[in-house]
Length: 136
Image 1 (tube, rainbow, N blue to C red):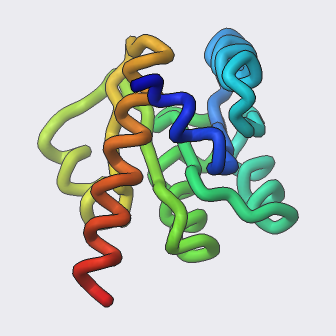
Image 2 (cartoon, rainbow, N blue to C red):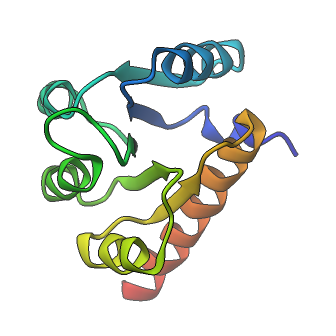
């Protein structure tokens, strides 16, 4: 099954300072009729979260100014029910522990394909749904 078909019902926010990543993901999501808003800084991401409700919030680890971990921690406090995903090329045990502490739902390593990302998002959404059903 095409993972993008499952993402059509979700609003996604992407925070990444890399123009190429923002542009290519915007085009890919748009071509599949999926909602993706992109911004290039944590400050813009927090502003977007004040104005809109997002179901998925994705951030690059290394952002100018406030980093991705700090941004996602703030995003989780503003929108705890959203899926929070971190992109990074710098994966290690310390980062994994910190993402768990901050409340990040998934970590996606760069480089990735667009289909791999979409599949990871769908899988994380399903895990989140199962978890919330168990807690009910």
